[in-house]
Figure 1 (cartoon, helix red, strand yellow):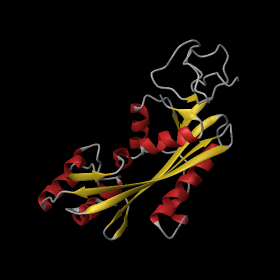
Figure 2: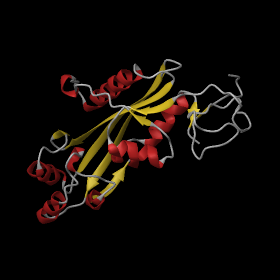
Figure 3: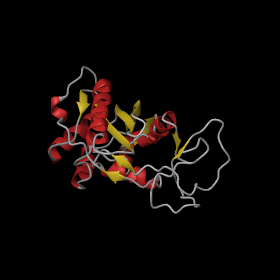
Figure 4: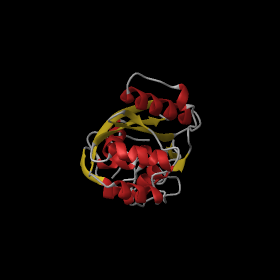
Length: 233
């Protein structure tokens, strides 16, 4: 592939056409945008190394075509002294595990933890646990921390990012929190709430990257792709 060729991410994109959203190889100096060459070297796939519906929804809303291949590693066997180090290591391991299964792919892996007043907060085990978590966060601030990695399996390189976003809950009555738990939305969600749903009503203020709270920090993802030589639009 010549220096000036664009790189089509998806094989089914017809030659000499554009897609609404695409990744293309960055060149220096940046070339004039032209239709794809007749037979460019193409990546076979963009892979999300997670079964998270929220992460998949974000990539879908960006207009990207991707496949899902969860890493399925034993997260309980991994421990680090700080939440930041832990999410970075989890993202790294998930990315490398999935990268081994794909040639000529861009693999996106990410792991998120919520740190509240009493420490790391995971997903609630039942409704009572969800209510306890929400009561702890009620009227207070917590931090959403995400480790992100993108692996370019063709070039054998990767880029990593660590993102922290502060979220402050407004004060709610115990009855309001109970009604929210009754909706079922808190189940399966770290911190027992979903910002993209009814849980948005609990939030008073966000400091930092909004999409990080949704499940995948888009700005950090764009930066990581740029470091590897790709831009999304």
